[in-house]
Length: 60
Image (tube, rainbow, N blue to C red; front, side, top):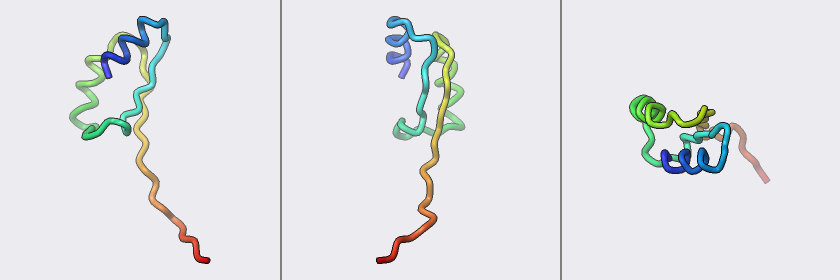
């Protein structure tokens, strides 16, 4: 992800979005502080979406 942020910086980006739920094996409690410490090139919007549970059922 650091390489992508560096590439975005080189292309003139003002901000990046880090979609953490797209990373395989990501453990927020341990990985997030390390990730944020490494990515200091641009301001970042950090998102982590939890999959929604199905709350309804369809019957036909």
